[in-house]
Image (cartoon, rainbow over all chains, first blue to last red; front, side):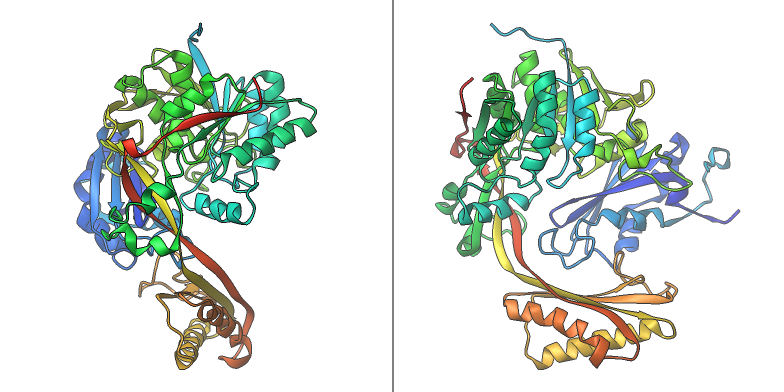
Length: 115
Length: 451
């Protein structure tokens, strides 16, 4: 067992756009992994993963009943859909950056491993 | 005397102006619908339609209205399904006339249309140059010379009023997406526009529905991880809502796709920031206590939305011209593909600089390497890569030069380039937001044709 685990292994994500702000949801497959993600997938860690794309800041919201975290990443979309020079002007694919984040797996209940 | 119903079924036949048409036809045929909603306006599309209205006063509605309505009008007419749509865009009255001509041509006779007006606030904001642009904090005055359009996001109240006329088709301009779905509920159930619980029910339903297939398995399938049955025949969603506020989300019977707690959760959080405060013109939705439950195959029950009272302002989206974007592409493969692409990018930059071109924004993408998620150092080099350069300029000629210089790389650049494309140039129609006190917006329902 590796000592890191990807967000991809624990959760599914979707990105949405509003102006120059992207929001990326992180929805745990399992309840226990939601707690693990809440403890480890911090605003700082997410900002670091998006640092080469977005200026930030990153704000995290918790929605426990949906087993979800919602990250709001500001200044992420090249000025917004209408003026962005990017190919993916909506940043629809920005959820993939979240999925690829590696988290230290220590502290995660191995019994809840979801594959 | 209005007879209030107990349960209605609302389908979403489009979540964007160029949405697919066949699933809407399936939905109208097999969805046992009372209402079919088409949400067809992105932030900037109304600006684009305002420009086409300037060229031709009979245009300015969503161009796909013709194709969409030709496909569904006969079915809706036969099955008594009422249509509600923001395809009126910048010219809902012209849209209504176009719809009525289509109905005549289809042999459906004279179909009246209720039209919602009042979202166009261009004159109101022009007279108030001191309004603050939300994104920049600057006064509106700074973009007034280039202003193309200004539209307030209207709420469900005026749409419900239009439905109340009894017209089989309701067309609007800018209305908040969820409000298009809340409106039939207000009308059918006689809900008060101040009943916050009911407003939250209609708003969360609308938010789940507004992007068509995004709740039925679109933007979701992932090989080996998240299965979506029969993705090619992805069905569109249906909301079954009752007067007591219970909600079930399902989809066209027999269609492909998938509705369950996972797809609904992704869509619920889509474009949401603070989950306690999703602001619409009708209310401020709070989803923190929402529970989604799988309630049978492709059926999800939604419980527990709440709302706070609506804000004293309407959000207004202002469209303004903002120069031109030019781009070009060229490909490199094989040995040192990335190094040659980078050499080409540098040469293009130098040539544009030598010509004295000025750009507000300039971007170099290596497609296959770093074009989607930015450049990071530890990515392996691919076998082939496509260079893309895009830039924004005040001057059309400067924007054209970008694509011209990129394309010419297959002759005047590094060795072994191919597939040059350019110049691609488009005028930029940018958007900004404002808040406008409600009392400055006057909504109105007018009829096209006789009931």
